[in-house]
Length: 303
Ligand code: CP
Ligand code: NVA
Image: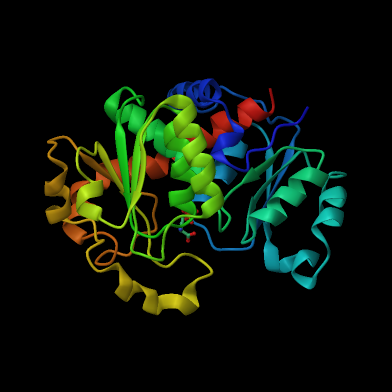
């Protein structure tokens, strides 16, 4: 049966670890996996992208496949053709689909009616490819995942939602600090709490960033205004005290805390320029690992 990757919790812990380890192998041997030979993978983007689009295109090429970039606005979806029909048509041509769009429900519908694996390349609800790659980066830096504490500081957006699931799945503790009114999605919180109970990990959601970063091995942040929220720029004023800067970093009580960012960054808003530069090697390794982790994911989905 085909497998989709719409949320990080579509994978079991053992599968995530297997994908990460194979990602390290592919990092060393980029052209060794030819799982996509004679396969055409569509890539529909309804939102802009630098990392996701290019890492998928290059990755599909490395694996012998044909990437087909499809700008959302150039398709009949933008003129209202329904998702169900689009899925059934594309199933006659493609062997897989990577999609970045707004509505998560639409991606679920697309996956339901498609005969090929569907990969969520970001929706308003989740960004699982980013978390998968970030877990690979964390393993690269710490050697382990289990028992580490990650603190997400900022907007309760798609990244926060995906971390709420990703952390407990691999045995990490998580604290999420957002301003009041910007907490993560309720459905993601409920699923995260269930996973944390199942795996015996800690999960905290708070409005206090200083309390949240205590004992953090990783501080993670993302933009305060996500794609699709361009009309809500005034929300930035609600994020006073939520910038990841040297003062906040000093509150972890740990010497080896690293700072991560999924990019693109708005320096001077969610992260100070000096902290961004101090951790730029980690941050650009995160970006690089998108390529390796997604190749490993595709190899897994096409096994
Ligand atoms: N982090 C990330 O998904 O970047 P892009 O929006 O450039 O793809
Ligand atoms: N939360 C951001 C992530 C970008 C990779 C957005 O959705 O725009």
